[in-house]
Length: 108
Image (cartoon, rainbow, N blue to C red; front, side, top):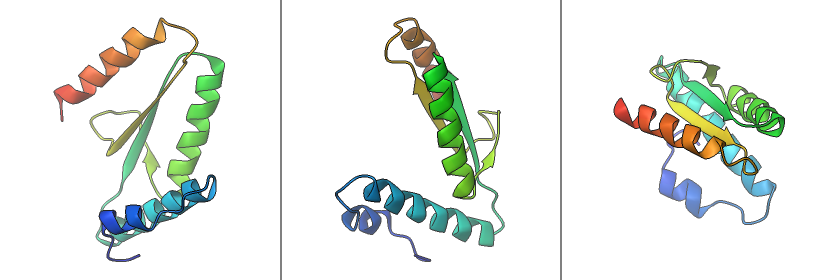
């Protein structure tokens, strides 16, 4: 997958889970390795808003990104990728999620 073409990655994606997820993780890993070969260090941030389950999901997502070659960062400005994980049960998480999304949009 050295010459990644994102449309082709999507076209070749498997349909069944979890094989589909693993396929995309491997494609991501290949992309990050290619960028590292060019001297670029990819960085990712996982923002957790909400309950303990959201925190556990955030840890899993961070681990997946690190396995794919991303360095972890707490800085929105440094991050190439920012993932938000929120609680779907507690309504008070929604305003914080919207606030963080707007903050990120401000420097894109």
